[in-house]
Amino acid sequence: MIGPRQALRLFRINWVLLRNGLDEVILATHLLRPLRWLIYLTPWYWLRGELPPYPARVRQTLEDLGPIFVKFGQILSTRRDLLPDDLAVELAKLQDRVPPFGGDQARVLIERAWGCPIEDVLDQFDPEPLASASIAQVHTGRLKDGREVVVKVLRPGIDRVIRQDLGLMYTVAQLAERYWADGRRLRPVEVVREYEKTIYDELDLQREAANASQLRRNWQGSEMLYIPEVFWDWTRSNVMVMERIYGIPVSNVEEIKAQGVSMKQLGERGVEIFFTQVFRDNFFHADMHPGNIFVEPSGRYISIDFGIVGSLTTEDQRYLAENLLAFFERDYRRVAELHVESGWVPPGTRVDEFESAIRTVSEPIFEKPLAEISFGHFLVRLFQTARRFNMEIQPQLVLLEKTLLNIEGLGRQLYPELDLWTTAKPYMERWMKERVGVSGLAERTKRNVLSIADQTPELPLMAYRILSSYDRRLRLAESSHEINAERARQARTNGNAIRAIGGATVFVCGTLVLLLGPGHWLQEGVGAALVALCYLSGIWLFASATRRA
Image (tube, rainbow, N blue to C red; front, side):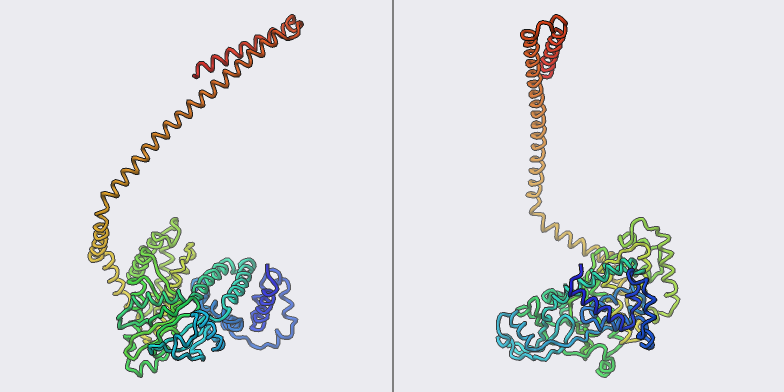
């Protein structure tokens, strides 16, 4: 049921759609479809001039609707398996152009979270935000020990705004799924549900801080990637304090070149960082767009904003690596088999048909020069093909696809000749050798032996517990058998007693009839027959009770 506030919001959405030339979205609904012809009678339809391309109109509409819809469009742009390419590319251009909220208001929120004045923690706090986005904004400061930090604080009332807009998104998605021709195929309700999980994860800054700490541990001392330090003493669910970093925005290619950084090395490092996070650490930064990445003059990357991270199961890691290597070798049969074995497609899928579909997607790509092949877009095509075979795209694979597209786009922006295939293949082969080769087998055996050795002193106690448990179950089974036998005997005894009582009752009834019944009954034989029946029944019941005893 739509409330008054949602109804007003829905009215504004329709107005923005009309203003941006997306009236066909409104008029495509079931209720308004018969009235589509009325649009041609309105003056503004003929006077609005030439419209931009459809994807640009969608992007502009989301920007006009506000930051939560912008964030939704950004996440939607990662669903290349659902969207047309031109629309996905346009949505990827969405930027959080959100006016900041006041520095005084930020101070109040921070002090409320800390439970003390800012001056007790920071020697210096800049009320002017360094950056402002849809969910939070960032201020700079300096701790008492002189270390420079950034303080990230959630927007006031943002959870209420998100709840309202999410409720409206669900309503629109349900209407689209019901009345829009492509609604069932694009699964708008499912997309909104994924967005809901992502957006609520980003509302917990302690979760983001934990992600940052894990990544920092994984890359401690690395010459390729630096993760800023989190200051946990002053981090709360709505406030996070992190080391301030200085670097060149990765999108500023000319300034990076001016520092003498090798662009080829920088591009290849980005690829290696991605595959290391996915396969060595199984914990990857899944929001690596240019706004979150900086470069030091030494050529080391600096990463920020860790609200979205991803991980794979051990099985997904292995199957993904085998898939990629099989693609490198053009072994499409093995790719199809791996999809079935991993459970990514239903077990009844015909491997030969799936192999043929994969070959159709892959062969045109391999005919191009390596430098022109987009690894990320190839993965998108693969997922689109797999959907035809009822493959349910898992969230971790969507994050992986999105991150790979970001990394590849970033790498080619830095070094246009970057060949991601050639860069990735040696790494994948090395990882597979470490996992399934002799060294991997030795490492797993060593780990298992150490685990077994650690448990060896407990083996006698474990054996005693197992034997004791078995003995208790055996005794319980015997006891249960005896109880059941006793219940059967008791049931027979009760039955015999009932039959004996019944027999006695019948005998008494026959005797009463014989002694007290009217004389003419006996003379006519009716009473005699009744008495005989009672006595015979009584004899049978007594005999039955005696036989079953």
